[in-house]
Length: 206
Ligand code: GRF
Image 1 (tube, rainbow, N blue to C red):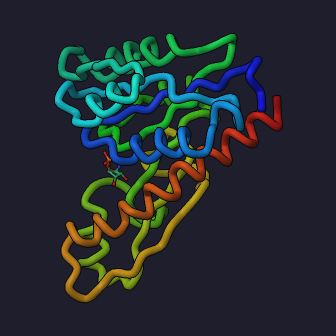
Image 2: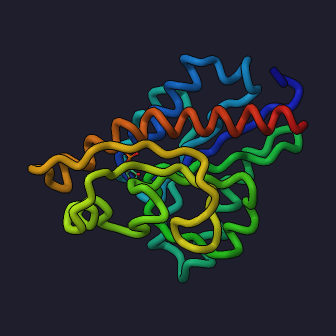
């Protein structure tokens, strides 16, 4: 427990935010505030219609929208996003930034700014199938197994040290949707677990 040095968590979403919900619920259920001195301080979306925003508000979590379409370029958007995230630093502790279905490619400057405290979940067994349409590609390749990966974010898309993985079978009659649903149930388990492990390591190092 480390209440004198709270660890803020800022979650970035673009849509449903079911991974964000799983993380918030794990934080509540497992008492991350007492156990790790951590709290989900904010949920930020690049889309105002992201369904996850309303859910976060219902949990009394601060939300904000930084609409990428209102910026001249990627760098300007990322600068505004960094400013919005960094508001949540607390007592000199910078936020852990959790990408949860955040559908924007981030600049090298952004990634460097959050080095060591920026994580993502990707719906494939990385390093297989980085990028989009992972489930279709796994089915097309005849994969017998698929899954999800929690990883540190580096400048290369969907690369970076693997923090957790879960494996599911690919069934003969799977469609991208049925496979995605099976993978998603595992995402909801491994993402909170990987973040809790990160928090524990962080607290041990303080
Ligand atoms: C998840 O499959 C995640 O791995 C991918 O986008 C999906 C987001 O789902 N990057 P949700 O918004 O967390 O429900």
